[in-house]
Length: 159
Image (cartoon, rainbow, N blue to C red; front, top):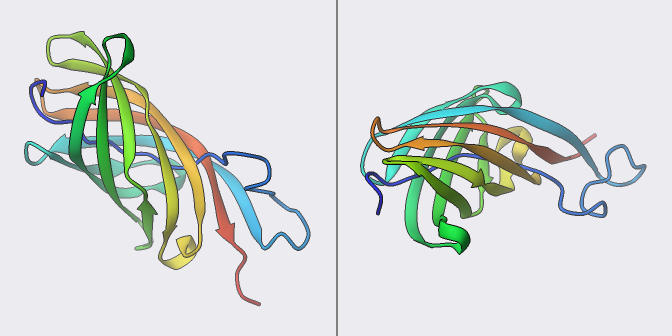
């Protein structure tokens, strides 16, 4: 393990055109692009806690479940997220993998970090999608920062 552990945050990009069909009649779903930033601090060796700005603003925590060597001198982290929006809705995320490249002692560039949305509560009940993040882990300071972008597909509201 390099310095401290690395948890992270992210969300949603539709994987194929057949998954999210925004505005399609009878599709039962509507999709929208999302983006913003995630900033966290380590609260233990394996868990971060922080804030989210942008379309999915609120709070997030991430727990490092493991790490393994990746291709081309990268490190692949396995991460579980917990996300609560400012409105009090939760966003459920499947276990994610973050690929990191060491750039200096205790400093990692996060070069790939897709996270799949798999539902939630409130307006995220039945939602799905994917968000991709890039960012940085500073193990020397115990902090992370990410830029996320993607697409969230929502179930149509009951009529």
